[in-house]
Length: 161
Image 1 (spheres, rainbow, N blue to C red):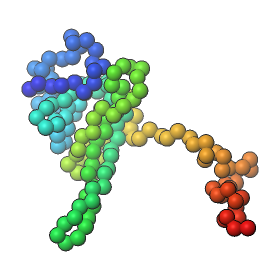
Image 2: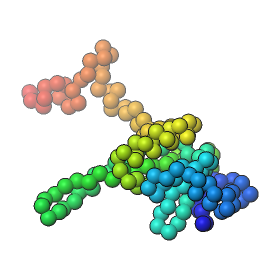
Image 3: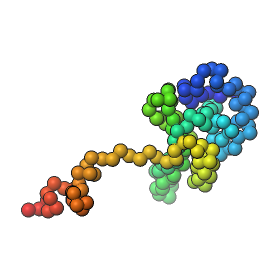
Image 4: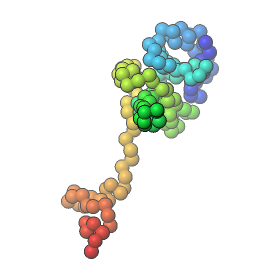
């Protein structure tokens, strides 16, 4: 098998293990759908290509659930697509964090079990979505006493005078 690195930040060519080493680790890894958790790498398959990510390169991971609308013969419905998102610094250790990969998982139960396994395997990586930046508008709507003011500009009159 030939494995492709997801990140360019894998160090020198000597630091990237050979295909034989990665193949042994891949075959011994725990599989969940197209995703495998190895001893030093995380593996996934996309089409006919196999990718390897060093565990140390992952800085954050989370589940992404997408609602997909579907039209069927008996009406409409929504399907939930579970995905694992791996984030890291793609080009340098000081660069911005980016999404390295989004891997579709077989279902909710598999996603929960995989999240638990990755929390144990990657203690250095943050779990979950990064908290949003505090908004200035949120702070502007609170007065000094801590009471929340209405969002409209009419001063609590509801726009009526």
